[in-house]
Each structure stands twice: as C-alpha cells, then as structure tokens.
Image (cartoon, rainbow, N blue to C red; front, top):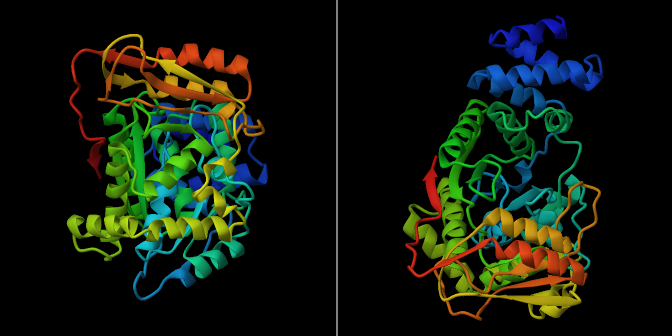
Length: 437
C-alpha cells in the first residue's frame, strides 16, 4: 500500500477501506508519510468528502493511535454508565462549570477532560485556573481517584489520548481544511470516546460566536457525530444551540466562574438555565436517573435549591487544591486594576449583543490568547449589565469592562460599543435551543 495511491483514490472521490484509513493514520504517526502528503490527502477529503462509514473508521484509527481511559470502576448500581459533555465552543459558555456539579449532585460520577481557550472562545481549564491554587494537570489515575473520592473531577486534556488528532489538526489549521465536517466529527468523537464515556451530550453551536454560522450546518455536523458514535457503539445526543449572543452576563475567566457560582446559588439568567437544564435532563434520562423531562427538571431544581450542587462545586475546588473561600468572597479571585462602564447612548431595548464582537473585545482586554503559549489575564473580562430584551434608558450602564492595562480598556470599549444593538421595540425571546438530535 502506498500513501500516494490513497491520495489519488480520494482525489477521485472513491471510498477508503478500514485498512486504508488505518494505514493513513499509522503512516502519519510513524513518519513514513510526509506532512505534504497528509496535507494533500486532507485537501482531497475537503473537496471530495467521506462517507459515514469512512469517517467512523477514521475515528477508530485516531482513537487507537494513543491511550484510552478505562472508567469502568466508576460505574455503580445507581449509575451504570459514564457520562460526558462537549461544547463546540462559545462566548460566555460556562455550562461545564455548572453542569458537572449539578450532575454529580444528582448521583452521576463525572471524570471530565477539558481544554484551554484559543482564538475568541474561552476554555474551561483557563476559567478553573483563575481559582487560586486550582490544579488541572492531573494524571488519569489522579482523575479517577478524585472522582471515586468526591464524585467529580475536571482535568486538562492529555497528549496521550488521540495523538493522531493533534497531528491532523495542526495540518488542517495551516491548510484551510479545518471546516471539513468529516474531519471535525472524527476529531470530536475520537476524543470523547478515548476519554472513556459511554454517553455524551454535545452542545453544537452556530452563529456569530461559533465557527459554524448556520443552524443547518450545525445540524449536519451534529448528525454526523451522533451517527459515528453509534457505529462505534456509543450513545451521543446533540443539542443545537444559538451562539449569536453571549451566554449569560459574564465573558472572561474569573468573572465566568463567579457567574457559575451565582447560578448554583440560584441566581441564573434564562438562557443559561434553559441550556444547562436541557443538557442535564438529557443525561439523567439517558442514564435512567429520571423517567421524563419533568422529573429530571425537578431533580435539577432540587439540588440547586438545597445547595447540594454548590456543595459539589466546593468539593471539586477543594479536591483539586483550589481556595474554597472564593465561593463566598469573590475578592479572593484575581482582581483587575481598572474598570470602565459602557453607557447606553439611547433609550430602548437590547435587541442584540454580537457574540463575536463581545468575545473579541474581551480578548483585547487580555482574557484570551492567539497561541496556546500566550499568557492570559484571569481578572480581565466583561460583565453585561444589560442583556437581550432588557430595557435601557440613555445613560444606563450596559456593560462593565475589567483589565489591568488602561490602554486595553480604551481599545476594547470602542469595539464593544459596536456589539450592542438597541431599538424601541421590545424583542421576542426565542428558545436558545434550535433542535435536539
């Protein structure tokens, strides 16, 4: 078998066999295929596509390129399956920080691997590391032990899982083939399955703040991921959600953790509540911990109102070395030196807050990174004092910007101004959820 022949085969739109896809991944991993050959194959895939079966076989080969995590010892009589969640990336998306303690409080053991932020989207690991002392660099053994001990743990992704995906993504990034659906789907599904989950609920976002721009494209990607997982013996659900506007009020790192804690204390925005409750309910029903959505919602509400979910968040922080004092006193988070209030220039209602522009303004403050090696400012961020549908009067504070560099505040403020749309008509609130697959 020769790599050049497989490039030619895909160039002609023909379907690869399971053995050929294994050869492609093996050749890339052992160095017998040059980067330019793999790049040529990626471009052929981009233009000619892959079938579901092909993509499932590619996904399996990527999984087999590294270690896999065995979480079977975390199963118990009440919860015989291991659950996980994944988001395709959004703005103000702190759902993981809320969902994981909620599920743990409902009896679901959670061992989660999460990533750092890159570009305009934030990363769960960065947010957690804004908690002084919080350790995310856990071995798999440590991760499992912490879940056995307190019921939940969140760690940074390890390079030992799906190393082929890392190599493929690096080449996709520089060959403009990132947005090929079979390649996206195989990347996401391989990481989730290698992480040891039996069931995964996916949050597939579309809109201004997402890399997928339309709900139709998001549905197509979601269906691919659900179908690929099924072919590999796993159950996935996908929730298609709008990312035209930021989730909640906070965008940044420490500021998003604070909003998550407030949510667990019962202070929640409608959009965050809708999405978190829906994803939690799907998980509880799939794991037979609730018979229907009504029962699931009731359980979720109960663990929040009783303080049990917040207690699990505290257990998570304490178990991983974080300062639990942040839960009751937000001054223990990194504090910015400067703040600026953005004020409304007219009366009306907030019609829209562009998610991408908000994220970019936040990155200008120092809260994001362009390269994985870039340092970030945990205290930098944006608090949206007014969000979609809320009434404003000229002069009202609509957003507060936090930073440690006054020059960054000025640049960010001018950009954030353009994110807000205010008009006289009170807007109709649509569901954040477009479809569930």
